[in-house]
Amino acid sequence: MPVYDYKCTDCEKTYDVFHKGREIIEDVVCPSCNSTNHKKLMSVTQMSMGSDSGSSCSDGSCGPYTGGGCASGMCGLN
Image (cartoon, rainbow, N blue to C red; front, side):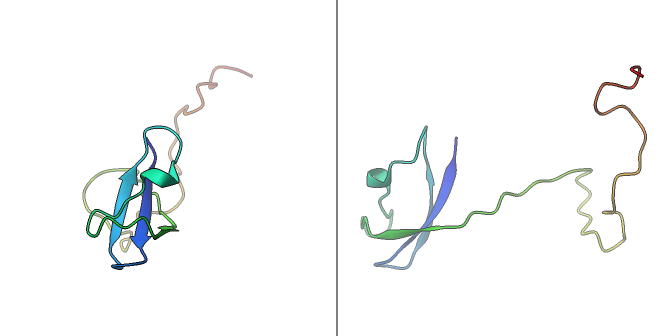
């Protein structure tokens, strides 16, 4: 389900809207002032890979993947 960020141009509040399918602009209403005047904001997707130890990459642990293994599933094929 896509999530879009909007900013109300009347009250300046920022809010998220969950769209069940395609985005329908008429359904976007500010939850603070009920205005339909808004601008769509650029959303940033957050991805997390690895452990949840809270590492901020300052220890150098966020470098390129150097492990072995067969991620593609094609290890036995030549």
